[in-house]
Length: 413
Image 1 (cartoon, rainbow, N blue to C red):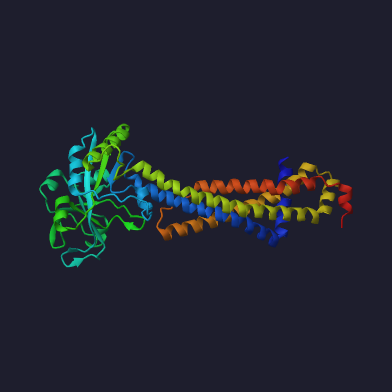
Image 2 (image 1 turned 90 degrees about the vertical axis):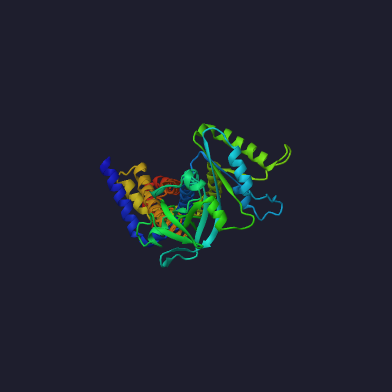
């Protein structure tokens, strides 16, 4: 039985080799559909990994309060969108003082300036640095890890100490791989002592997270005075089971700070990190659906081409089938021979399509700056798709070949 299977498979492969050009074109058609499917799914997977990496550090037990929520910022060109007032420093400070939900910590922060130049001795950076005013809870609540030195403490913030924490890019940029700890940098003429360096974060949607300087809030407010500064509040619940109650309590507290009456809607945004991730990931489902539609349409066309080539092959080899049957070959043997040919062609197209799709997806992901990982789900989807195509395209020609009458087949010229 095993020997018959091997011999039958060998005949099928020899037949494929004898029609190299026709086989290659069919493989290419199948590969085209699989490439479209795998390529788009690879890019979608890279996008999802990027989103998860960018926001996973926030943890599932944090939320933030700002002027608008994320969905409102996406639709900020909507003319019907309500314009919320900024969260001013007095409001942010009042919220921080009033909000005393158990097992939570609140950080108050704001973007003091962008496009700033930082100097160290005779060196200076390009004017691309972002300055953030923060407190001692900012790094833990935002999932930022200090890899060298230390984070701010309450003494630094309360006493307006001229200290700072740098993003990781400063080590290889301004300090040229020297240890930046205890060095003095200059920002707008003010001297700051470096007490810590953050772990590398990479870029979020094209914005580098490693070109930031964190300084105490009050110092940032005094150096970078600007009208209508918008402050952000980040809250972390140490007990995840209490997160829903912590969010509800925060909304009530902010409504009190804003002096809203019971019938007025919230004029501020609140975003939970887990909801934000789900919102972003849900938008990638459209891309996945697009990949399947394009892939299925192309693969459907290739399955018709594959069936056609196998029907032509059956017609061309009618006499060969008659000879094999007259020598004792069973119907299942003939059917398996032609089905094997279809299987090999289909899987060759699938393999080529997977390789091309992953390569194209990798190139796009690298060019855009997404985090690439091997798209196992895309590969599994491609394998299943080619297998279904093989069954759909190969079954009918194989059955037709097995049902040929040996006498009539021998007469065929």
